[in-house]
Every structure is written in C-alpha cells, then in structure tokens.
Length: 286
Image 1 (cartoon, rainbow, N blue to C red):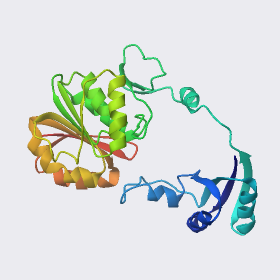
Image 2 (image 1 turned 45 degrees about the vertical axis):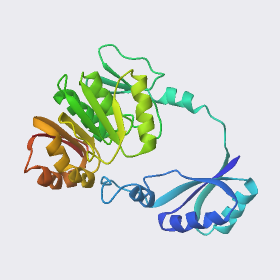
Image 3 (image 1 turned 90 degrees about the vertical axis):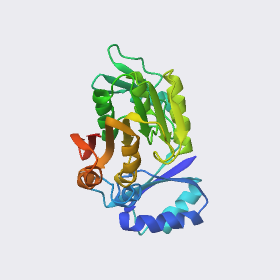
Image 4 (image 1 turned 180 degrees about the vertical axis):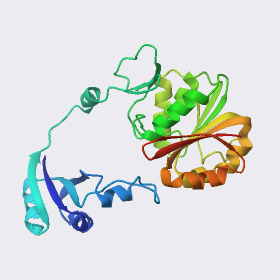
C-alpha cells in the first residue's frame, strides 16, 4: 500500500482532515502530535505541560497512488511539502525488543517480557497494551519512587486509576498484604490483569469510579490521575485511610499544585512535594 506524507500550516490542518473523508483513503495518521492542534486536544482541560508547539502539521495518508495524487493536486495551494512511500510490513514485536530496553527508577527495573531481569533490582514486567505505561512518564516515575519509599510491608493498598497496573504490581512486590487496583477503563483493566499474571502476583482488580464503592480501610492510597479527579476523591480517601496512613497523589503540573493542596490541606499533612520536570507527586499523611 502506498502512503503520502504531506506538510501543511497548522491553520489548514483541521479543515484538510475533515475534507479527506470525501476521498477513498484507507487511513490517516498524524505524525507530529506536538503540533498545537493535536497536542492540546489530547489533554483534558488545561493539563497540557507548557512547551513550545509547532506551526506546521505533518500527516500520513494511506491509499492507492492515484487517489493520493488527486489529493496533492486538489490541495496544492496549501501543501508545503509532500512525498510518496510504500508501506512495508514490520515485525513490531522485534522493533519493540530493539528499542525498549527497560527503565530504571532507583532500585526498580521496569521491563517488557522479552528483556531479562537485572540482579539486585525490584523486577516489574509490563506487557505493552491499550492501558500500557512503561513508567517513562515523569508522573509514573515519581509515583514509583514515592511508593518505594513510603509503603511498609503488610500494608493494605488502594491503587486508584491503575492503568497498566504498574503501581499495584510494585506495591505487591514490596510485600503489601493486600492490593486493590481500581480502573474505570475496561481495556486498561484487562491489560493490568495480564501484567499481574506476568509477575505471578495476586492483585484484586475492580472496575469502578475512584474509591466510591470501597469499604475496607487502607494504610496507603496511590493515585496517578489528573487534579480535577484527585480533588473529587478527597473525602473517600480521608474516610478510608487509617490514622497515620499515606496518600500519594501524582499527575499534578506545577500550576495545579496549590489548588490540590487547598483541597487536601485541611485534613492531611504534607510530608513531601517531589517534582520531575513540570510534574509533582504530593506525599500526604492523615
């Protein structure tokens, strides 16, 4: 299958994307997600980190050569550059194996199943999937480090918005007595269960909205989600935590730290505020 790569000004990208639906194409891919139009649409509210964004959009359009040529001719006035290439079948698992060698955070090593474990590291195996997070994002790294430092053996733990299950898996590896991982997205939950099996761990997973249906008291709660959702969780987190319990809140940008602390500060003591880049994890104690 042929594909066409074109570059246009960002101001023309949205209209072009809409009009391409009238052509017989097999698919469309945005190659530069940092372009303002696509970058900002992928974040909720104003959660996008501050960074310079481009003024040009690059699109890859799949289809027959003749139809791709028609597109170039029809939009020649706005296309800045274009080129044609052939799609090659690739062994994506092999590419993963070559490109992803695992990620370290302190004495924690996050790896895909095809990479060998490292001696003297806490070994976390994560299979790529719909809910996959390799741990490379600052919020996950911050959460892993805070969990490593504050979780005590035999603790009862809630992992809210578990995603790939990476934090729940670490909690169990750190000898938590019971880990309840909660996720609202069904596909992410399926991926998390697979990852727990890969690590030979017994973790209780449930699909739900934050802590709303939980009833057992916990020694530690970790949540790596966005501030509007973190704020909504406050009352349930307070009611479920044992006195002296630890609450780890991550997914918070510089500009949102104070508003989260304003909600939690009346009932929790701030023990630490750790940051990486523009992101923060707040470590609170009941």
